[in-house]
Picture 1 (cartoon, rainbow, N blue to C red):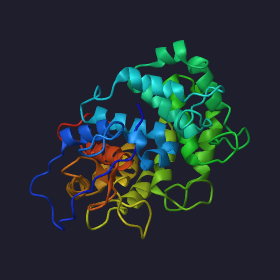
Picture 2: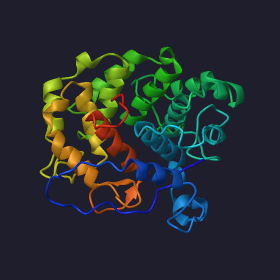
Picture 3: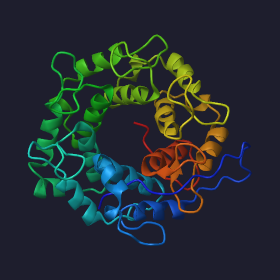
Amino acid sequence: MSLASGPGRAAAATGTLRETLDLHVTKHVKYIQDLDTASGNNYTPRREELEYWLTEHLRLNGLYWGLTSLHLLGHPDALPRHETINYVLSCQTENGGFGAAPGHDAHMLSTVSAVQILAMVDAFADLEARGKGGCSKVATFIAGLQDKASGTFAGDEWGETDTRFLYAALNALSLLGSLSLVNLDKAIAHVQACANFDGAYGVRPGAESHSGQVFACVGALTVCNRLDLVDRDRLGAWLSERQLPKGGLNGRPEKLEDVCYSWWVLSSLAMIGRLHWIDETKLQSFILDCQDPSSGGLADRPGDMVDVFHTVFGIAGLSLLSFPGLEPVDPA
């Protein structure tokens, strides 16, 4: 059970707010289910397509994105649980971490997706029974990637560091109940060092502010119960400026809107209590215009091709906006 990007095209931009705000739940569920099994009306197995193999490095992340979408849409059982668990466990390596797909080296990003998937389907017992060392070995792998001097985390054994990896580590360790394995004080200090004059955060100290890194840093502080360190008004102002005239949000100044920032920006605003600082109605309309009304899925912006990455973050953004019929989502 693994997913690939899918075909389809979002609705064309209308230039005006919708009179009716419809979320095509049934079509989105079918779109996600078909990512592993069919293509259009021909029912060609996805694994026979070139696109399936070109996205192999996102396989486990993609399964997490699809499964999360289904949970938010109120269809948590739309993918077979047993096959899902088997696929996740097939991606585990001997060091306890998880690779992007079977045979890939372990990486922080695929490891956190594995932990999140197993948590969603209540399968930590399966990890203990059939995994390579169980939960404790996964936690040890993650903790071993913390830099003892700076407090940040590497993505893998080759040493690249990034605040995304720091957040991913704390997220996974919190789910595993193993935050005590790492130096939280140093991790928090590193996050503080990544703060910029505009109140936002970069990938490392001195780096440009970016909405994705804001989510990572604020999310890490939320896990550590240290949101008292955030300049909420200054950061809230920077985040609210990410909304453009069409209603969508961008990741940094002078960039186009993209539906994925409906999650990165909104979740950050929610964590600091400033969600009301953007125009929710215009953002809802923008997200809904990114749907493929025929085959399901969401794109980065109206008229573009849909994929499972933008599908989950568009739906998660709508959930944060309390869109009717969606399950609530934790912004951290």
